Length: 300
Image 1 (cartoon, helix red, strand yellow):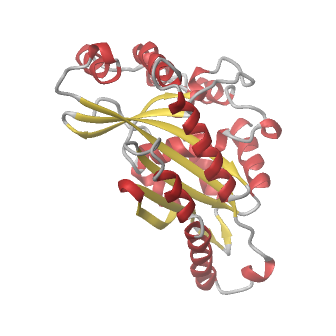
Image 2 (tube, one colour):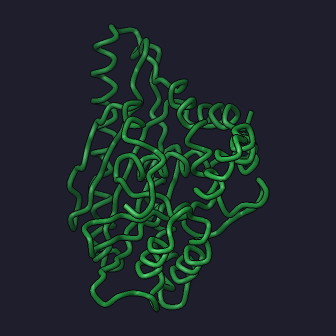
């Protein structure tokens, strides 16, 4: 692979795969990951610890990370990454963006090309466009540029609707519009990658249309993260540990399968046909509270 994946497959050990690679319309895929359970509670502590490390690679370019490591400036890596996050009480989206990055690298094996957070020069910057851009290698001559879209909303239905609305906006002005702008951002930031001259030349052939070889096939696809609220009552926790684990997976599956028809109805629309979609869904109990607590821990 031209670019290294900084988030390895062991990140997935944090989760139970409730649904993996569920077929959707037009050969698209759905994955549902549920945090592992300890004492009838989702283990947010283990997730937060892993995200503290992942944030460095998400928020900084590989070249910056490698230079800081070379000069043994380990503390600077963490502080530079934390400085890019919004404060917890103003931050509704960056947890989902970070989780999507981790899942696209660890599960889809699509390394990051660019992240929205990477482009920020201050925490309050607002960067339009995709939440992140990744590169998926299908074979030696076939690649997908994966544009990330993350929505963490109380209701899964709302998240689905808003995710497709955002993707529709990106596709609406495809000729000379937002998608071209995203590609220019990628091209302009390629020099931030710590790759050889030969690798850089090949990346340009994949990512810059005017550099593209006629025998290379490059398509656009979308990675979509949907975080949603799944309340767990006190009575639901008053069962054995093994029963709770079984019950929570069943509850999550039902919540997701209740919305499958909605996702498929979007995927059948002509505007989305021909694009590959990779969906990642994750439940949170007390979404607003947990999201705030995790961000507080990441920036502290």
